[in-house]
Image (cartoon, rainbow, N blue to C red):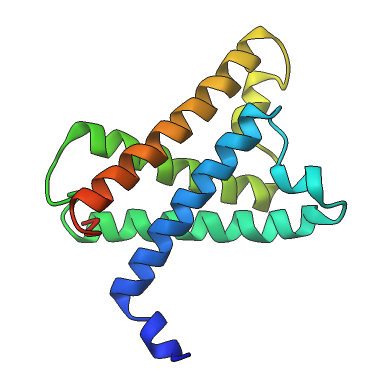
Length: 149
C-alpha cells in the first residue's frame, strides 16, 4: 500500500466526501433510532471512539467547506441551490458534530430541550434531511463522474 497515493489531493477529497456521506447516514440512523449514537447501542466502551470519530468528522467537514470555498463555491460544476442546500446540511452537521464532541454538549439538542413534542419532530426531521442530503449528494456525485467541485 502506497501512502503517497492515498494522500494525493484528489484522493483526500474523495475520501473526505465518502466519510461525510457515511457519517450522514449513521447520524440519520442515530436520530431516527432515538437520538442516541449508534455506537453506544452496540459497544459499552464506544463513547471514546464516538468522540474521536466525531472530531474527525468535524475536521473532514471543515476541509470540505474549505475546498468548496477555495474552488469558487461551486458544486458539481455549477451553482444549483438544491446542491448547495444538501452540501450545507452535510458539512454543517459534521462541523456541529465535531464541536459537540469537543465541548461535550450538543448545542442544537440543548436548545431544543432534549424532550417534548417539538424535540421529537425536530429529531425525525433532522434524520430525514440527513438521508435526503446523503442521497442527493451521492446521486449528483455519480452523475458528475465523482467530481465534487
